[in-house]
Length: 335
Image (cartoon, rainbow, N blue to C red; front, side, top):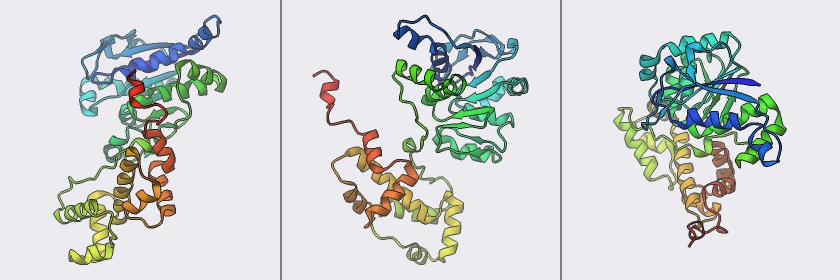
């Protein structure tokens, strides 16, 4: 039986503490029950906190600990819950860093849910290894931990001895990944069926929303950004934009990238993809119509560009984010 400790932190989302506990505790139990078999739990799971105090979650919920983290005498896996503010967490619970290093050195695999990856990165153990975190926190993560190879498009990353997962609802994906890695594919599938969970999610890029990066202080670049964002459906030339604003093309590209992190062309492409995503979510248009509407005469080219940024073909994106016409909203309401 694998021993798992879930490190509950203050200001966490409660689900990132209790969710992995529920999933892993049900392995060998839920599926066996549904098949009329005796339960055979495969994980021994405990919630631990600094000093054994309840974890005070951001929504006011308190999660009680089974024991103090200081009393843990070895384990197979430590899962770090999400957090809202890394500085505040370290100030209140700074000894968690040395404790995590100690568990790692004793042979435990470390894992994180959502922004719990910031805690793992603080240990230095993620340097030169792959990691992921919530897509909305990627910029802050990269700035704070430049030695970590952030793969923010991924839902799960596995460096062998350190696992990370994306946004907080990925706790179940992380848990199921641990089940498959520790217990095998068959047990993972049986558990997923019992929990009615779709296995195989690997990307969080379909869920990300482009950050338009306006808070940089360069008024001229902000003016050009606003032009790209409002006139994306029209033919726009980077050379013409540069000339209109008294800049050379290379100067514009260098200054634009310094301010936003993207080249002007990449920025325009991302603006157009965001517009296409919105139109796909609303329904009622073919992808060819959407391509023309956002500024592309070649739907085939834009289809490839769309998949590059979202990880999904347009048809897959539409299916994921629109309700099936076979199940109208009124039927879901029971009317």
